[in-house]
Image (cartoon, rainbow, N blue to C red; front, side, top):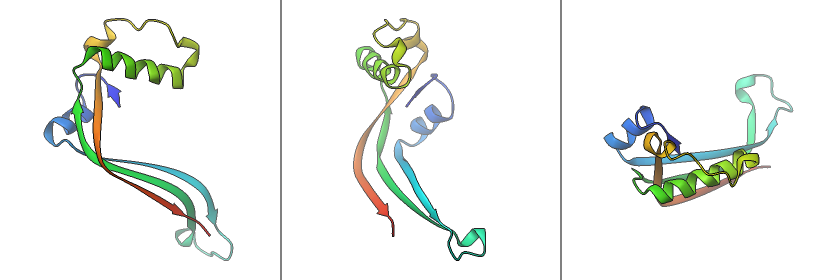
Amino acid sequence: MHGLPKGQKIDNVNNNPKACFEVDELLGLMTEGIEAACDTEAFYNSVVMTGTARILQDYEYKREVLNKLVEKYTPQFAGIELPQKWFKVQQSLNSRLKSVTLVILGP
């Protein structure tokens, strides 16, 4: 995660570094024979990661992480030097995972 040096993410990490992150992939909905929306079942994949988060101070590592984000989300800007000023205002969070749970639900 990355963001400005103040805000809810930074406050949360400073107040309690315990972290949980979940990513879900909706594969579909079971609606056949269902009469009410509340009774709909979902097929999905889910990954849950838990651990601790900390605010990174290492300038070079932050640069490396932000470059990877640029490569993934805005590849047209990959390889362009990131401005030094970005690293003065942005914070990066690094987590040490304690566990990863993979849940796969389906028919």
